Length: 133
Image: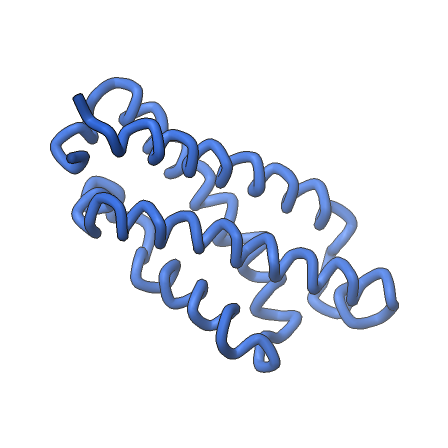
C-alpha cells in the first residue's frame, strides 16, 4: 500500500545502527582535543565525521523520498541543521573541527537517536502513513 514505507524503515534502522556504532567508536573521547592529540584520535575524528555524514545523508534520503513534512511531528530536532550538516560534511570537510564533531557526537546524536527510535515506532504504528506514497 505504501511503497516508501519499507525504504524509510530500512533507512531509519541503518541510522540507528550507525548511531550505536558512533557511540561505541567515541566512548573513549572525553574532550575535543582527544580527536587531535594522536594518530588514533585523528582516525576517530575522521571516522566519526563519516559516520555523521552517513546518518545525515539517510535523513536527506527520507526527506527526498517522502517530503520534509515527515519530520513535522518531531519538532525537537532542528531538521534544517541536520540537512545542513550533511552538506557541510560533504562539501566543506576541510573546515570541520574537532569541537564541532565532539559536540555533535556527544550532544546532538543522542537526542537525534531518541527521535529516530520514536520515528521508527511511529512508522510501525502507521502514524507516518500520511507522509508515505
